[in-house]
Length: 75
Image 1 (cartoon, rainbow, N blue to C red):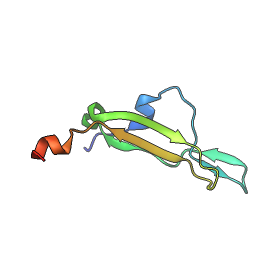
Image 2: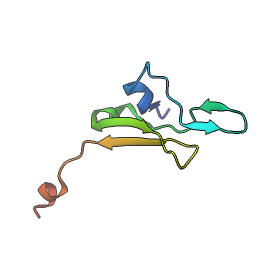
Image 3: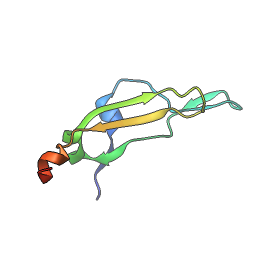
């Protein structure tokens, strides 16, 4: 068992958000997800959906907390 979760939904459990609009059907759907393991949650900083006026899809964004690579490698 992989034990994957929808990270966006975990951070925004009550938010009603859609990532796709179908013009021919005039309907909204959530077809884009941020899927990850529960252990990844401690690395998550921000999750958000942003509207894109040039497309029928919204952008799905995940920002992670990571260490400074120059600190890790001494550069």
